[in-house]
Image 1: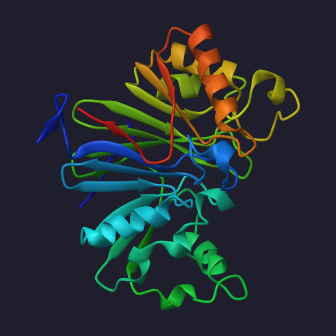
Image 2: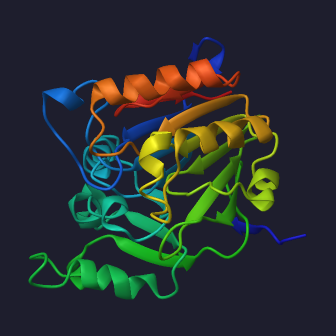
Length: 281
């Protein structure tokens, strides 16, 4: 059994401070325009609050408005879990207000060794005018290796099927299990992955392609709808939430995918929107 590392009003019966908020639900690159109004265009960023514990998953462009909210609330510390270092999961970090606050501390959990070197490259000239060494917050890097416990939450890790490597997450609260798989090609279905997410309450997973699109995009590291529905069924997920939408998919496309899911699977599913909140037990 893996070791666990220790780190330091109600709505419909759920505590107000137990929730997930999706600040960005788009994959690959941000988008804008009238055809994206309903679902939004910010790239991956998920905030999780549970009592006094705040976790952030990925630092896409959605982390920019999240940072403004955290500053307004005078939040001093957060744990940021990066699934990987592709641009869409990192491009918002230079615009995250907490990194310029000398009273803030940020622990960055990364699947990559020496992530500080990658961060220094992100801020290097001529790409960005402020160097990483000039940031005011206290930033600590930790490599994801084994389960971590932060406050009442246990965070487990599983490798994703994605070019360059990525990490899938499972967050266990005192009352629920939540899976977060933003970038993962789930074809063929892995028995290890099914076991990892077995009995999951909320499965958050990408379904970036229509089945017919996937035939031309195998090996790109993203899933098609049919395989994700099978994963949800085989893991006995109570509900499937779909994120990391393809930048080419308009609101109409995403509503079509959602309808296809309802027609093909008995697992309840929902396509996530920017700024959507899911209340936890």
